[in-house]
Image 1 (cartoon, helix red, strand yellow):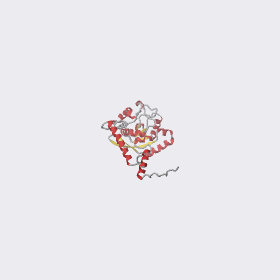
Image 2 (cartoon, one colour):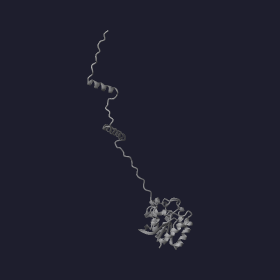
Image 3 (tube, helix red, strand yellow):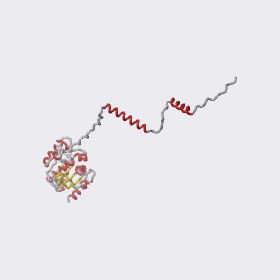
Image 4 (tube, helix red, strand yellow):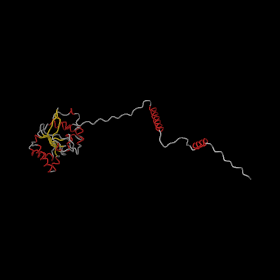
Length: 266
C-alpha cells in the first residue's frame, strides 16, 4: 500500500509565537514584571500602609489624638538642716539644734553628742564623729585622753579649746562626698562661723569634702577654711591631719603631726 506523502505544518508567525509564550507564563502563574532591585513603589506602598494604619488608630481613638502624658521629675531631696535662714544664730542655739534637728543624722537623737567649748577659742578641734562610747561628753574615751595630752604639749588650755565633730553621732564609714552634696558642709561652715576660732585642726582626711576639698587632695595643701560668719564670710587657718585613731595606733604618724604642728604655729 502506498503511504500518502507527509506534509510539514505551517510555521506560526512571530505574533503567534509571542502570544503562545505569554499564554504559557500565565498558565505558570507568572503574569507580573519582576526585578531584583527595590523600586520606589515599595517605599510608597509602605508609606501608604503606615498612613492607613495611623488613620485607623486615629479614627478608633476619636478625632483628637492625645499625646502621651509626661512624667514630672521628682523634686530634689531637702538639704541637710533645712533652709539656712532657719539655722541658729548663736553658739548656744546651735548646740541644742545639733542634738534635735532630724535631718542632721539618721538614728536615735538621744545618741547624739554635743560639742564642747566656747566661741573665740584659741583652737577648734574637729573630728569625724563621736567615739563609740561617748554619751554626755564628746571624746570621753582613748581618743580624748590622747587629745588632752597633745593639748598639754601644745601649751593650750582645755578652756581655750573648742572640741566638735563633723557628725552628731557615730557613723561607720560615712559617705563624705554625699554628705557634702547634701549640705553638711554648709552646716559645718555655720558651726565654725559661730565658734570663730583663731585656728582649726581637723583630725581625719575623710572630712575634706565638707571643707570644699576633694577627698583625694593632699591634706597639706589645705591652709584655711572659708566659713559662714554671720552676715559675712570668714577665713580660719586650718591644719588637716590624720585621724586620732591613726595617731593613737602609730608613733610615726604622731611624729609627723608634731612636726607639721610646729611648722604651722611658728
